[in-house]
Image 1 (spheres, rainbow, N blue to C red):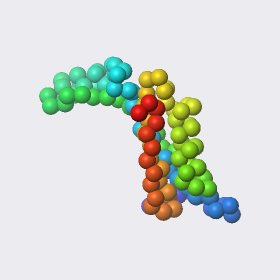
Image 2: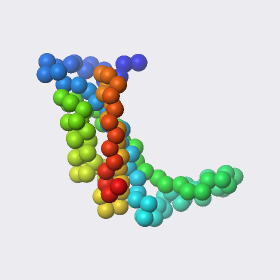
Image 3: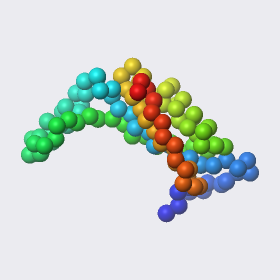
Image 4: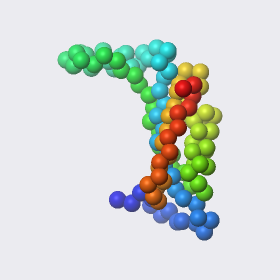
Length: 111
């Protein structure tokens, strides 16, 4: 299966497609009522070995960028400005080169 979106045309400026995989979670110090509700439901199904459940968000962005550093910077800025609440959430992400195999990882948010 191709990694590039359908109908994607590589432009003459030699930009590359990157995929950012972002994970946003509540900070450990923040109570997670949704996670607790899910944990109780799991326990009611008979799974007694689950000790902690936290709910978060997973987001993927496809970025057309001249470099991996630029794609990483864009991802970080979008996380800070829109996707995460820096008061109660932490985020981390990885950037994958869809035309190759390089990867970068970054933690953000108060970690």
